[in-house]
Every structure is written in structure tokens, then in C-alpha cells.
Length: 365
Image (cartoon, rainbow, N blue to C red; front, side, top):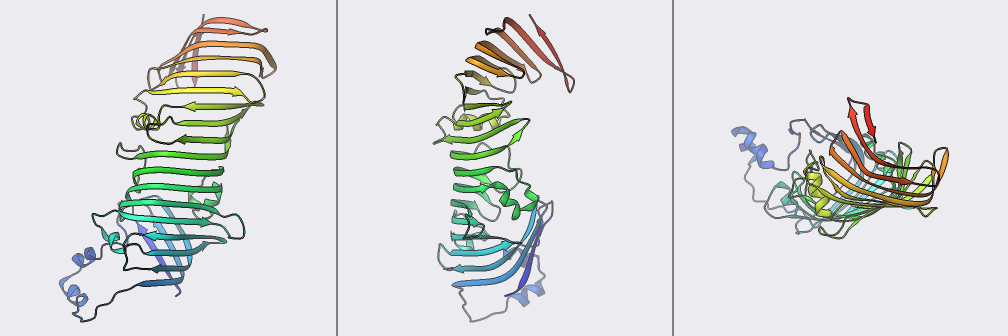
């Protein structure tokens, strides 16, 4: 079959499609309903269906998305079963992609009290190259509105920007080598997606990222995010290169549950935070420990290094110790400051205040 399909939804959520045919019937006139409801003795059941060469486009102002693609082949089998099989082969411009797996009963798309099971795997790119892969196994409580999504997603992406070939308006950053899995519960497919409501979240994560674009002269690579359960420590590690130095940073912002609670509260809830850093090509080690909140953060800073390269100079036998307090968003107090090296030594206290939009007032003793 050759044809086209265009889906539209306006900012208020009104769409030119529905998964509930009975709503169309209620809106039709009595005469229309009589025409639609012609008595018949036929009992028709469809066990499988397929289509090919279909142009699909969508403009969703409600979800702020849109795009187009071509279905090369789409097959549905076992439509009368509780777990139909779907197989989609499609492309956008010169980029092929495929989705295959099992879904819940088709009738459940029109609403129902039962969870809609989903087990799908997707590939992006040509089979004779190294295609990107993703899969999802879980359930959707409200498939019509993508509400109550729970399950585990696996992903293996060589380059995140390859998804821009399918979703050009996404403008995704150049993040490379994404591999891992994320388990989540009761997520919503409707905006706004953040902040997460308390009944939604991530229950486990194991994610590796090869490289992240540089930001203000800082490049991150070999990023690892890991937490086995909600009560497990959330471990975040990365290699950081800045100003010619390579540093490995390991952070633990509490447990996975604590991190999400703090995020939901806008960090009004205190988040325990431990950050350890060591020089990749040296013996320097530095540590930051304390609690972070939007107001009233407190940290203890300590460190030492045999040599510490800085712009225009290298310090030797470095030691550092201080207490850092952030009573508000615009102020930093440093007390108990002690810095020593062969080249320079000083101690004392310091206070920094942001003045206006860009100014900074500082005082030291």
C-alpha cells in the first residue's frame, strides 16, 4: 500500500486522532450514528495485518515535537492474543531504523484497568555497520497518554547525535559511547517531565558514557553512573581534563533515593555529598565532604600534592585545608583556611558575596 498519514495535536491537547472510537460516536449526530450502526450477521476477527510504503508525519504542539519518516514495512501478528507481535522497518532520509517485539492487547490502547505490557527492541543504522540499539521491557498503566511507565531500558549508542537523523528538532549534544541500563517507575509521557513527582523516579541505574562535549575548558570522559537499588549509594565517576591536567573525580551524592528526593525539593532537602579527586599523572589527592542544600551548605575541604601545576607556575609539597559554608546562593564563607607549599604559605578566612548580576565582593584576613 502507498499512502500518507499526518498526525496533529494543538497546544491544548486536541488532536486529529483518538484511540477511543466511542468518543467519535458520541459526537456524531443521531443520523450519523444510524448510518454507522448498520445491523450485520458478520463476525469478523483480524489475526494479522501489514502495510508498506506509508509516509508518516506528526506535529505535536502539546509535547513540543514533530517529524516525519517512511514505513517500509509494518507487520502485526497475533492480534487476537494477549501479546501481539510487531515488526517495523522504516527510514528517514538515508537512515534506517527498526522496532520489533511484543506489546499488550490492542484493545487496551483504548483504555482499561490492566497494565499494558511492552517488550520492544530497536536498532538505528544499517545492519552491515554497527547499529545503535535500545530496548525496553516493562508496562504502561495508561497507554493512551503514556502514563505510569515502569520498566527497564537498555541502551547502546555510539553517538547520541545519530538520533538527530530521526529527530532533527531534538538538537542532541555530541555525547559518545552511551552504554547501560536504567530502571524507572511510574514515569509520565506528558510534559512537564521535571521535576519528578514523588511517586515516580529511577530505581536503579548503570550507565557508562565515553565522552561529553567540553564546557568552559573542561572535558569529561569515561563517565560512570551507578546505583543498584534506591537504597544504594549513587556513585558518579569521571575523568576530567582542564588546563592541561587530568583528574579522576569520584562523587557520591547520597543514595539514589536521597538524590532524587533532594532534586524534587529543589535541594531544599539536604543532600550528603562526598567528592574525591586524584591526579591521573601525579600523587595529588583532594576531598570535599559535607551536605548540599539550596541554602546552608557546609563542606570540609582537604588535599595534598607533591606537585601542583598552575597557570605560569608549579607548586611543590602542597597541603590544603578549609571549611566552606554557603549560607545563601550569593555568599561563600571560607574559615580555617590553611594552605602551604614550598613556594607560598597563607592561612586565614575569606568571604565572597555576589554583587548585582556579575560583581563579586571579597574580603580576606
